[in-house]
Image (cartoon, rainbow, N blue to C red):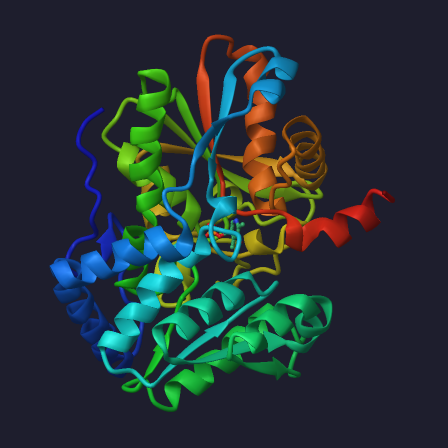
Length: 396
Ligand SMILES: *Cc1c(COP(=O)(O)O)cnc(C)c1O
């Protein structure tokens, strides 16, 4: 495999994707964040502090686990999972939330802002802000506030201010608008914590850097366990942070990588969020990337059974990796996701997040044909948040 550039250029482009598609005053604020990030990224005190928190607070390294019963049942490839579900707060998101909170604190920012849909980003960020000691304000659509009551309580318990948004459709898109408006009141002193490898430069690079610990650990753990590298890596893709976290350490290796998007109720219906699969290059949230868009360039409504995956864009590095063919993007449906969710619960006693179950569903689909191969799936989060929904859906 030839050397694939792992960094954006100075303007934040991965090939033709990324950049800062912003008005000049915000560009200046992003440049300031980038400058501060590049300074602390290489400072030993920051590296030591982050490393210490990863170990003693998050609980890293997370294990790689061989799913023996699942693999035997499928009768083909051996399936392994990287257990990001065991992290404090239950998913990979804490990896970048900690990094962002530490950076905001070091920059002297007074408040961290974010939107949240299902509440996973909000909970991880609330924890990171409590730990670092910085004010946290989470905007959330009123419908989501009602649907995700336990996560709202968690955020409040950890000291975050939760702002219910009652405009428009009262869901994620309106929460983004509301949080962004508040941010624009004082971008010098506020920090908008983006929840994936998306948005303007430096966020796709920075969030990727905070997540790449996942692949660095997994590469070493896998070789120790098996004496070799995996044949395939599989990760679900919403904005793409857990996938970039796993993939980055393997980009120069001869290892196949597959990103799994939700085909929801079907790619021939409007009810999916298969951005890399069916989208086209466009502009969204300050970046150039693949977007599911209408003819006017407006993002289309998207859907997935896993609310962490229903984003109409995908990170610029994924967009680039798709174009050069280094990562292959495939889909899994709601039904396959539910099947994988139940199968992993019953064969291994591990309840995966519905997001992660998409990646697992793909691995389960291809494993029977791949005897002798090893597949490593990123189990990006745990399914505790999804149990009531699944029990209701499957009438358990
Ligand atoms: C948010 C979330 C995702 C999707 O986000 P990415 O940035 O694509 O990783 C995936 N899995 C879990 C468990 C999540 O909470």
